[in-house]
Image (cartoon, rainbow, N blue to C red; front, side, top):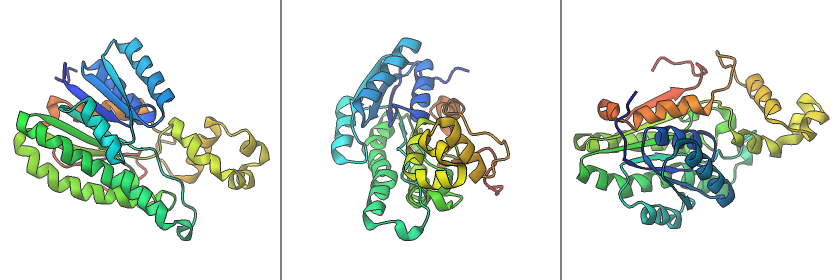
Length: 272
């Protein structure tokens, strides 16, 4: 399918791994010129090299944290007039008891999950509207719609983002600027291992000392499937989500405005 974005400039904020990297690959294959940001320089440069070698696309790396003003300035300096913007963030820590969440934890969650995407929307969608074309996609979390105990530091900020996005998207729709969000459930990404690592004591209690000492991606995937009732009985693959996001970045998305698409293997029990 031709997405109609050949030559479009696309920023993928948080695109060095997982769903962000998979999305960058899809946009590159569709012919977009890419600008990819991430905080970790080594991983970012490796991702850029990988995408360039496999797709031949032009890709510019930007070492930046888009949750900060400095990071957003860096994105604007590298690509002041993007046609497409996709925003994702690293998952915050798991929560086992709401009393363990500090005020600082909440500030971090809101800065990355709400303020960062909102400020990027404000900064870049005005130019999209003036040029008469734009696509903005937030890769958020199913916890924004389906409250999950362990994702308490992720869901609330993203619920607020969905509310904000719904209003802004309707104001920009007449300018052929489409803003939407995807709400992924449990996906097999590199980040899962990092999120699980601080909880080795709990892992040892449930699965044994060997599992905790030699924590592998396979073990984390098994634990996730044990914790969550996912009808597909599998984790999602970043590449599948990326194809959906790429469609929301395409010409075909012009009549899709302010929506939040749940991609969770049927885990959420609702029809809307």
